Each structure stands twice: as structure tokens, then as C-alpha cells.
Length: 295
Image (cartoon, rainbow, N blue to C red; front, side, top):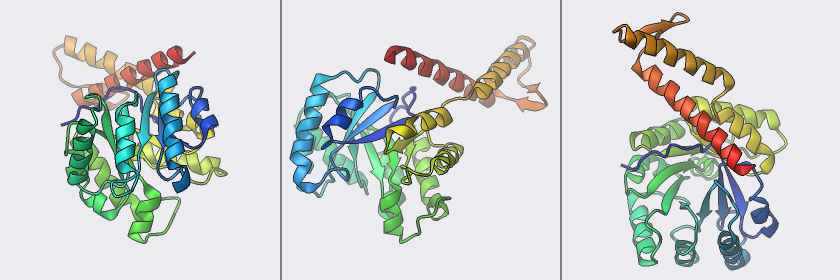
């Protein structure tokens, strides 16, 4: 089982490899993760130059504490092997693998990464974007220790399901929950899909709230203006941190008295609540540390 990384992954912004200015601007945005894109965000005639752009900015560095992934082209594309070979020799933290449908796709990528001498610590983040991928999500999540995260690709998934694009995402709820179950059962991070209407700020925030309520760790993003909203909603709020402090204090007092459970504002508090409180406090401290490092 892959180990869930204990670090903030609230916001992951896609950045087209063909857009040099955006790649360089990525050093300044407050996203926890940057996904430098060779797939959907790049036209066929720009694939190779985009790859060169990405390799150049990775070599230059300057991205601070952010995790950097590169979304390669799919396993059946003409650019797949060249993408893997190029990224295997880079400083990227992970390869973002689009349209993963079965565990065999992961085996193929792992074998190719090993053949191209990719660093042992380079991870794989799997995009679930088809009906087959959803139904195989657990096998994909468990396929190899390099698999660190699942990412929902709602646009392609909606198309594959012949569903309607609704803001409440009701046609996708079952698929989303199956992917969340697969991620949690295997100790992986899971990120929600982008919100595509950049003119609807409140709709975006509603989508973030819905995603957090369902159990996502963060959200993939298409524009820098959405980063702050995602960071706020997927990070612990001041109210949650205060509540976590009360839970820990009450639990410590109960343990000192030899009790296994206690009450906080009328709510029964057990060990599971304490564990969640500790996780929230730990995450808040990590976010503060990241913010200091980026100043």
C-alpha cells in the first residue's frame, strides 16, 4: 500500500507546457502543487516544444516547496514513450498519468520508468476519466507502491457516461464516491476535478465545499485566481482548529482521570475524534510552514 503523504495538497494547478510565461509564473502562485501539462492543454503540433519548455523550467528550478508533476500524454499516444523518457530524467516529483483504465497501464508505466532510469522516489498520480477507470479504481490504486494519488477527470468521465454537465454533479456522484473509496482503502491522496466556468466564482466555491464534504484532499485548478479559494476551503479553518484544541484538551483530561471517552459541548468524544483533531492541527502547522518558506 502506498503511504498517504502528510502534507497539504489543497490546490493543484494545471499549467500548459506550451505557455512559457505561465510556466515561469508558476514560481509565484500559492498553489500547493503545479501540474505542468503535456496532454489536453497542448496542441499536437506543440507537444515537443512544450516538453522542451517544461524540461527547461524544471532544470532552472525556483518552485520552492511546491510539488511539481508533469501530465504526460496517454499510453496509446505517439508521444507517450518520449514523454516518459524526458520526465524520467527531470526533477519532477511525479508523473501525472491520464486516462488510466486498468492496473496493466500502471505496470507499463513503471516498467518504462525503470527502463529510463527514473528516480526511485518519482511517484505516479493516476487520472480516472472513464467508466472503465472508475470500475477498476481500486485495482489501479493498489497496482504499485509508486501510485500516490487519484485525480478525477470529470469532463471526459461525463462524456464517457453520456451524462449531463450539471453543477451539482449528481450524474457523477456514484463514480466519485467509488474513486474516493479506492483512494482511502489504499492510503492515497485524491483530488477533485476542475471547475470549468471561470466566470462563476460562487459556483467554484460551492464545488470546493462539495468536494471537501465528500472527502477530497484538494482540487485541480485551471486558473491562478481560483487558488486562494481552494486553499481556504480545503485547509483547516480557524473554527476547526479551535474545536480541535478543545477536543485534545478534553481528551487529555479524560485520560488523566482514567476515562476512555468524554464530552465536549455535549458531543461524545472518542479516540477517532482525537485522531482527526490531531490531523487538522498538524495540517494547519504544515500550511503555516509552507507559507513561511514561500515568503
